[in-house]
Length: 227
Image 1 (cartoon, rainbow, N blue to C red):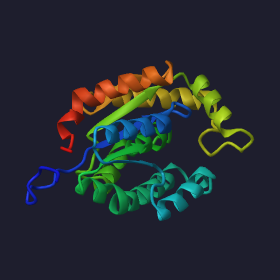
Image 2 (tube, rainbow, N blue to C red):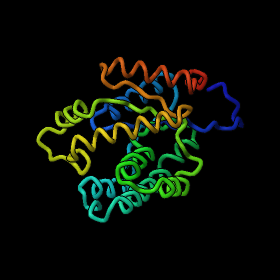
Image 3 (cartoon, one colour):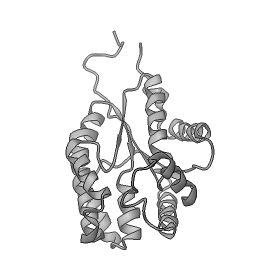
Image 4 (cartoon, one colour):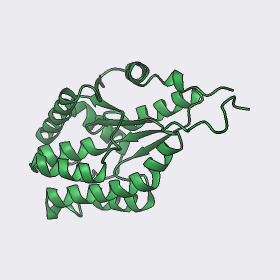
């Protein structure tokens, strides 16, 4: 017995996203967040963008291979948005409605940074796409992991091994410095939603700061399910 009335309304889960440059440690920290939540008895899943569903993973392969790039940043933004629609409809929203916490490696802020700030798409266009695609399903908390691009790219290279770089990892250092600045600006512009995390420290120290932000902002212990 859970101790909860059977007719009690189900609470919507929380939506956490992680953003940052290449090699910042987003996927590692996403896995740690999910493990910590499950340790409290809170149902949680990790997912990623682009991807997260079968159709979105197909688009991911095309986007990271650079197939869409020759069509320009607007086409890329639309392709990312198409993948996001499927991801939201088939995975994120159903999980949240079931009371599951969703932890996503990249989300709409990456479109703002990559195609918006660096692709020079008009902010009005980015906002319009985000309003249509994401609507009210914006993250409850976004963790911006900030890291020097050269360190991040070195980490990404070590992780990648002999595999070739993808469409974005292969960009210049100047590109990645501008990307870092774009993410920092998003965090500064939306402090109620975003927390800027120093990613240069050890994995454990980064995880500790992330959990501190989650505890302070989302109070996960209050969500703990009775045994």
